[in-house]
Amino acid sequence: MRIIPINTNFERWDPEALKQLLKGCKRFDQRCQKAFYEKYYGFALKVVFRYIYRFDRSVDTVNDGFVKIFKNIASFECSNDNDLEKILFGWIRRIMVNTAIDELRRNNMIPEIGGMPDYLWEEPDNSAGADQLLLYKDLVNEIKKLPPSYRAVFNMFVIDGLSHQEIANVLGISAGTSKSSLSKARVQLQKILQKNSAQADICRI
Image (cartoon, rainbow, N blue to C red; front, side):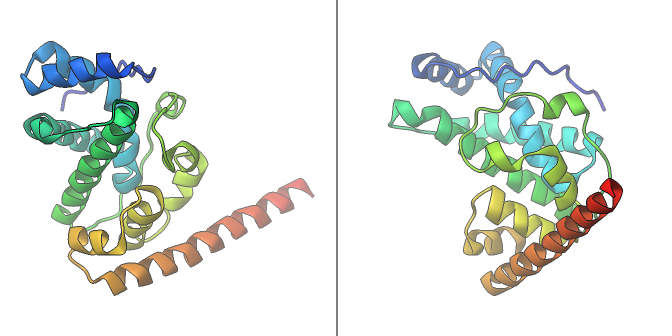
């Protein structure tokens, strides 16, 4: 496995510059593809890591996701320049989530224990939505303690904003099972957080 050096530049581009970057990617311009990859790599890795929780496998999965992005980028359209990057973040997120789920399915949803280098968590993330608040290192570490099936539903519904029917379609389960898994995930996560809080109180005594 070869890990490509990361140069994540999360500064917002003005809509015209981003449109030109996307046009270049749609022409399969390798310089534009490289710039796109470097700009959104860190964001994509955080998304995938919430599902897989092992850095080396997450890197491979992210690279698989970018292959899908560049193969399908001609289908990406946005008529509102002001929302261009927000919608693009959502599109990238959806592809990365589906790629991560495919990887988990190939491995029978086996839980992975691992870590991602601290410097990646320190990268600023200008994506809109729940990720800005919820992709916090400590919370992610707690989410990974959930059973894999609960963890996937929690990630997809709470953080990635999919509906229960969309989750059902991706995971091959019923919408009712998705709702049940989310409820159980929330209960388990609450217990984990309460336990950690109690332990912290003991340490302060």
